[in-house]
Image (tube, rainbow, N blue to C red; front, top):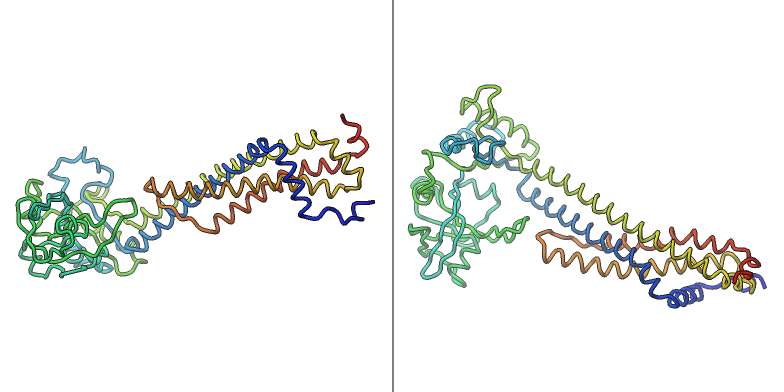
Length: 419
């Protein structure tokens, strides 16, 4: 009776026999699939961290990054402050901001900014918050909306009125369920009237609470809050610029740099006493780094899969040698080379499939744990999991093929002679 007389073994039979063979030596099978388990789990965790970070970066850029420039005082390279006495650290002024507003055509919004930390006190509640002294354009540049109450009116900016907008976190700490509008809050020793509450932004991309701040008009901050910062008159700590057309970001940056060099009387060849940061550039640099990281992590995970596959191949080869007699017997009762090959391939495939399933489960749990514990954003998606499943099947087939065909090539008479 030839192999074809009974149409070969059908699939269910093949799998059953394969399972039986693996169960007979289950500890070895489990250890063999460990390589695949680790590989697949690693692939899933790595890729989901890579993709999560990528999405977070995209969100940052699409939010505000493609249309803003941040100008800081002091040379970009000397930011440690070591080379700068405090006097020449504050090299930017409100006049610089006004000049940018007047003279650089592509600019839509400009805001000078002062910042610091303070205790916000209401009744017996107090909360240490960071404060920002800003101009009107600061809100659109940074994408802040007012949830309740209203923004500062133009008089508040010019007269240095003692009014304040609270971020959601500060409002909750001071007022609990109340809105807090119209109440008087002390910042340091100075009483301020709450005129509005900022719409909540939640956690920032790197885990900080964006709503933990209070905002006051720039002149107010200068007179009332930055008391001991020994600020030169008119100095600001940062100027933010919003550009109307994202495509013009680079040219606008060049124009702003030229204008400030001229205003600060910096000679050609001298170092700037300010630095203009283009968020989009910083972010694209980060994107490159993240891409590279993802590739590296992927490669590491890939290597562990290959190692897993070689483990499968090793064990299958040992298994072929051990089972030479069994193979000879099966050939003698009419199993053809194809059946034998199928048999061993099925075993390799089962090992890697079981490894794949366990690995996928571990990978998903691992990714979720990483997302919970770390500040790394993660994005799990079906594609990655599908890819991992595909990988595990491919590993089994690829590394199982050689042992299977070796088994199929055995000469039945030789095989039966083996003791």
